[in-house]
Image (cartoon, rainbow over all chains, first blue to last red; front, side, top):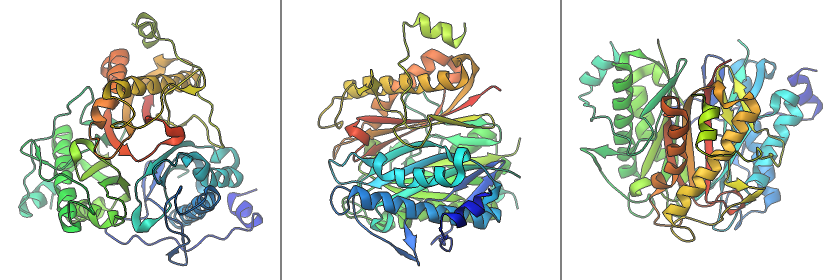
Length: 153
Length: 153
Length: 153
């Protein structure tokens, strides 16, 4: 089954790709590697939730936010490649989690994005991953994701 | 116009490339990709400003600091490639902003680097970007930039 | 001398490669580039030390922790490639240091990893590097390392 079909079967719809608010672009491809700009959990042009883990949001909410942020990343990928079916391999995901002092469950939060990648892309979705805590993220977002993918030309 | 000519026309002079203070090197090339070490806003071997955004420095000062840090990155690029004219595409910029609790305008700060990249390199300067908040950066620097470029061989 | 021989000569033994606790994998290769998942200072399945620099741990302890984390990264590299001797070049190291407010010696901490890379791999170990402060890291780890290597096929 194609990745686009699986997305449909999973009942997922991608948002409009987020528009950079400055002089950068959503994604740049160099050779087979596609580097994405940082994505936040946007829906309909707004953050779905704001605040820090360990203070304003539960781990469950963080998990869902990182899933929403990933949908924004996928929207960029589709917009850049025309279709998700040109994804060859998800290479690396870095997940930044806005963290109150003492919050150390960043991996459980970023699993929201990791789990969705693997459900959607199967083996091609199994990625290297880094999860870190940030004192603050843009717009008071709870999570921000960086993604590198290998794509077929 | 060549990138070197445009730099001159813009009245910009690059600083001496910063010297790593340890066992790493300023840049490593792998295939067409050039990975730079993190750069801080140095001029004449010293930070131009120190401190955190949202506490010690204004957004305007942060914008200028990220511009100064980018000049250090360009100095590394020129030193590595011989000339900026071998830059094919700026691929990705990650901007770390030393942020006091509650400061969420990291993108406005990193625009100082992004705007300069696009003014200098035009289309080739339009990069993927990530802006995040750090609780502290080396030497109490307000910003630190990571850069990946695609270069012609 | 091969890198494996040098490792033995240095009296270093690699730990078991850390097992990801979620749906990601320890490393993904795309072309000649090998991207590693974030590594923490694990030994025998546990963090060797926990806490923040500038509060719970000295710079000397942080240096040693970043060295231990690097051994975990090397264990992943060997497990993925079969042998360290297929490493062509260490490309880039990003070191995240769990930092209390006011701690700005992240580079001195990450030198533990950088120094070991150069001792082991010589010229091939001279990498681009980024050192940043994180408000918190997974499991309350003091350091977390991200590594990209160029490998021979």
